[in-house]
Image (cartoon, rainbow, N blue to C red; front, side):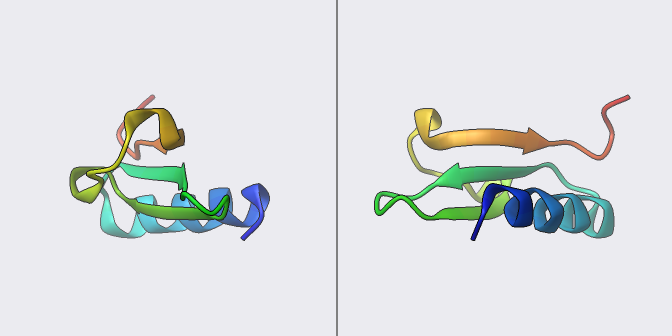
Length: 55
């Protein structure tokens, strides 16, 4: 997934679920998104966090 696609998917999830979503890089170099409260990986792998409550 490209960064542009991951960002669009993360924004859509954040606004639908109303939870913070993180975009992270997996060990093989691919990008993925997950709710922030479910991410238990290395904090340095996080590329972006989208919070629907942020101004």
